[in-house]
Length: 346
Image (cartoon, rainbow, N blue to C red):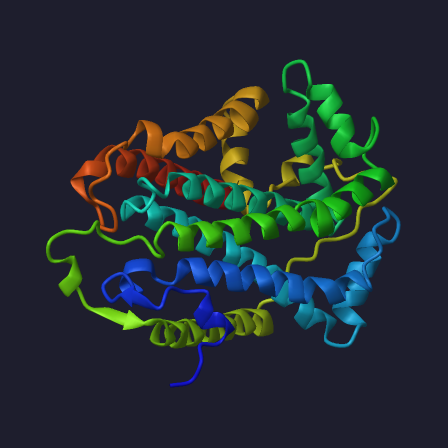
């Protein structure tokens, strides 16, 4: 028998066959990791052409798209990898909830996964801003003004983000730095910690040991790695298909004379924040843009300690012990999806 390779060493020697089935995890965690690595691989070449200044940023995006060899493909791959990462990461979170995989001893890993998803959202928003066109500039203006609604520290936080009292070159440089370093490095560290905790907590979430546990079938890690390889190829095929036939968005550059807010009705948040934009139509910025999102994050973070403190029902889809957690998270997900669709159709 050949020695285990690097990828096989990332897994325990054997894995419960039931929990290794695709229809249990749908491979969402591995897909998210692959897409994040794809962002890094495609992002590094883009850095050699992109110029993070207010005057040149939009033009450099067009240079990447229309002039640089295969620049359009790299940009499309980067864009669609970011879109798919947020989708697979969100679905992974829902899978964890509905299968009871957040329960003890995996409660801390639940927090790590939630932090990775939140930082991924910030990564996507910072990348969105780097386009520096009419759409992104308007969304940045609205978003940073919402930040000013924070009690006491709002103005200080605004100046920290913007780099002064007005949006300009300093703003773009700061978002560029956050995008390529300030957010990527923490995500990489958290992803490594998250993977370590999965292994330390006994591997993929599985049913608690009982009298018949020893008879439960198991598969060697080599078979699991082969399945993961096939899933990775499928994800890359989808990514390349999207990138070949659907281009990343590209709006007109900011007019320095007219300003990006000449038509505020046209300002649109990125798709993953459309639900917050919908709330802003009905409630003040402090409530819709700060308090409600913070409440959503707080509920998700405290889920294993408040909504479901039981240990039974791990690795069982829709187990009755996690009914409250499933209902609350399902309601939050449904609300975000409905608000996003409604706002998108405006």
